[in-house]
Amino acid sequence: MAEPVTVSPEVFLAMGREVLAKQPFSVLIGAELAALSPGRCELQVPVSEAVKQQFGFVHGGVLSYAADNALTYAGGTALRVPVVTSEFKINYLRPAIGERLIARAEAVYTGKTQAVCRCDVFVWQDGEEKLCAVAQGTIVALPATPTP
Image (cartoon, rainbow, N blue to C red):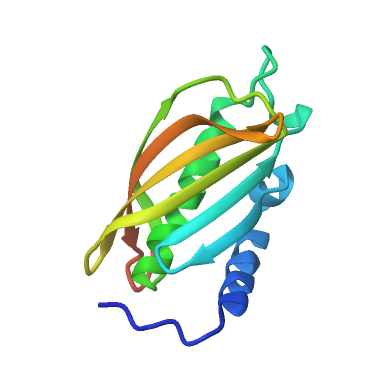
């Protein structure tokens, strides 16, 4: 069982935002960590022309990024150790057309070295959230000395 969080929710979120700020791609697309608690995450990405594909939808790779990163935050905060994604699956449900992506992930199972997490990805459009993708992934603890 993971140790209880010994910092305030605000400090926990700030720590998560520090990690996000160290990810060059996250910075490039303007990703924001909106909420973070043990085993749960909400990651948002503003929709700009730079993240769209030729038909004007948010590119599937950006939807996958949002889901994967949210899953990893959920799994990492559940396991409380440095982690990476071991496997990941996404289903695209509708084109993402709107102003902002919202990826909400949660750990549904946490073991000693892995967490299985799920994520719903919404697009904010005309004042409401529309579900555009669902994902699931396995998040695993990094070995003590990761190899490059």
